[in-house]
Image (tube, rainbow, N blue to C red; front, side, top):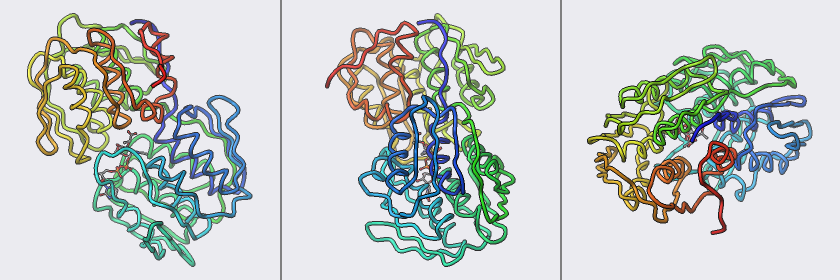
Length: 407
Ligand code: EPZ
């Protein structure tokens, strides 16, 4: 393949910033919104709560939350994605009350929300968990919260609940992912007073009101990484644009270890094609700025054809190797023990029918299908559509022979 691909807005920023708009006293216009399933579901959810939501301009969402009264989103919507848990923090932060069914999302482990609830309780909320999570707070008072686990969701959710609390909240042991900073910037754009996002400690001084604002999302770090892996695996000279190379350092370093040369521009990346097979490497997923857990699955497709034996340690989630069974159907060789996968590189993969079992596992199967001999049919693409905007069209524009077919 060859040509240029443009990275869309960050999914994991969008799915937090859209619920965060509920905290505003006015209309929010957010640009660089990725056109993905999760955004559509969240737009539907906010509308069901009484917000006016307009997605008619491609890449933009306009949210008027002023008429929202309902604090109980439906289970039919919340179970469609993990990020519905952000409705807890946003509704609590605005109404001091939220009744939210448990979140859905990719099965990659237990994914509890105890740290989110710990933060809400610290702010003065009482929590009742039945088939829904009911959170009630006559008032919200700033507090100190020490996260037992570095959690992206809990860090963001507690920020949402704290921005309009009385007084100052300190969150310790915070997640530092780029999308955490993006959410903090959006809230500050609305008049919040958040400092330290992107470090281990975030300080939030509560304010009375948050006003309307215009905001543009950062590019998607995981989509950028997926294109880097696709370029490397298919030995294609692809210019990846609209990205932030500094967000990609852990993957760039790993690709260099595997024998690739990464060329960084201001907002572009290029992986120079390598004729030899990739070198086997060891990968350990870590919280940002470590190697992202969301990229270990697509990366494992590249390692399936590396020269030698690679090892992936998945330190964040306990069940994130199910895609390796599907890669084995394509000729891949791997063995999983607990949170470690050992991948024996093979010369070639073959293309039988495989199934996406989660979002990033689905991306791994697309990478594998692009380099396998013959045709690969990937089912379960609804998972992939949740997190990648127009991935089929973007690949076709680069010359890939890929099309969406009826199941
Ligand atoms: C977010 O999930 C992302 N999802 C995930 O991306 C990403 O893999 C993950 O962060 C890590 O970067 C969204 O942003 C919507 P965590 P989240 O809370 O918030 C444990 C994708 O493909 N934990 O950082 O669920 C948890 O079990 C998705 O885009 C608790 O124990 O991740 C996990 O082991 C997949 N208690 C670890 O912390 C809690 O209260 C990190 O989870 C919360 C988390």
